Length: 484
Ligand code: FRU
Image (cartoon, rainbow, N blue to C red; front, side):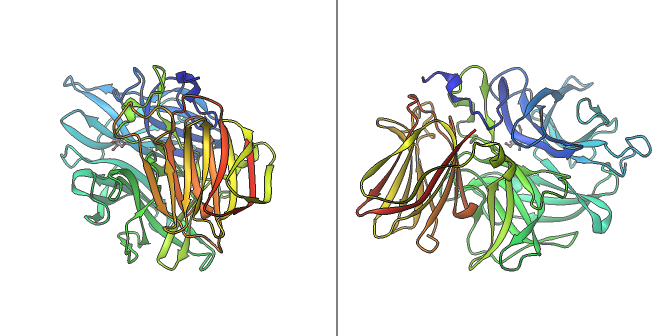
């Protein structure tokens, strides 16, 4: 135990070796979900940024393919790194890159990064489902002569018969929207920015339409997600705005507070899939599990570094404070887990209850009522004193995830800590779903209204679970655990 390979998750995608950061070019085509990603083919720290590639038939198990878009030399001796971006299926051959009548052409739109000199947007195309790519000979397609201008995300906007790109000027906290008929010529539509969280630079924006659930359903709203910072926490995080988009301009709803996609420390650079088949009623996003603060230092050893979240379905719900984003692991994921193993039903707990289960890779669902207790804790990945502790405090209505005693924490001074998020009970109950996967803990509270994603690096592997009441007794309405 404590060996680096013990940290490799089983149902979260990790590269066989080397460094990864942002997911790129999430796109569905012909039975395959593509996950391209920021990848260093030569080492386990950031560098030589290229697009790595994996495919999946079910969004659960992934097959790693060769590097799709490697960094490339320029005639002036500089090198272009292939920074973050997206991919679209150009089924109408708007780009003219494909043979007449071919509906399965992929176009990647990425940031061409020339170290210390420039960032602009470029495109590449593939006629063989992303296996091989040609760079467009007239790249870049969008150049403002800036050093920081990146992370294009493109959607098809049927009302205009056009593509719309969302892209960011990171240092100016400004998102720009562009329109194009052919993916080659882009015209500025509008800008949005200088509001919300500006504690860190802005990166990886995306604009998508998300259906409303519950009250006001059958509608949808536009959501603008931006990777940036978390004002209260001082770490990186993703923020989002809910609003309207009229084909030209994004207008956010009135918003009292800043909205964050994930309240943990390790969820960043998430983007939605493009071209999902209609059976998916909701958009799906994947994020990078890491935080730039210590991403290059996480102790996963000499082979791989970095991972991707479980694909998450996104929906909106109207709350007393306005629309809020809800996220849940995609249902396909649940299908491949073992049959529901019900561990407890209507059990009263007073003091510490050791759950009759041991493991380090599972999907746990807990419905719990604190009743008159001050709070309760759920200890995960526990071996003696070592544990990742999820705690609910009734007085403050806060759910917290404590990784101070989770195992290896001292590899970076910014790693250890406790995340807190306000989660009101619903009819006296807290619903938590926790995906535990060796070194990754993804917490979905109250049906995905609040999410917390964190790395943890347990050094012992007893994998015990316990639940403890604080003050007086609590009621576990149900506890079930599924394994992969
Ligand atoms: C976000 C980011 C992007 C950039 C990429 C480079 O994590 O900084 O803005 O395109 O990583 O690897």
